[in-house]
Length: 235
Image (cartoon, rainbow, N blue to C red):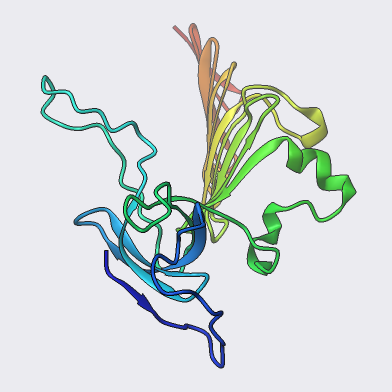
């Protein structure tokens, strides 16, 4: 393990550290990721005491299973991007065997405070849901009580919603919907409805479907076809 002291703050003063094993009395430390290496699933980090550690392994969130009957090894590569704040676990009180365990918030992270409750009125909602802001900027929300789930793109143009339970307080109907650039696909217990950004509509129902284009509407059932509720063809 290559270790070097490198202070990464302007005018920073390094705390005094004894020579030898700097991690002797520590089970871990916070650090910032400096480099990422997907060849061996490791990172280079700068520790909270200013040391640089190379080839720190990153844990897998999928069980790494060695099974000779399979031609693959189940696993997950999810390397923290550069400048990520990570916690390095050091079970041997040294860099040998150290690995990236997790990440963590800081109260100084203003840009992530949208994930936190701003006041007491938001507290219960925030306490009972999982919120994720991905590296690509997607917002993902899952509610613990009913499993209702929503994904929103960073620019707000795409929203994917899966509500397994109706929630009137939050205006959440029991449905699955995809909204993209003002086009909407909705699926519920009654059927499917597709509305494009020009307000043209296709809607399926139990006994048929309808198509609306501008002021024209065609309704098709098991026994007939109606156009604008006037012309009817019976099958």
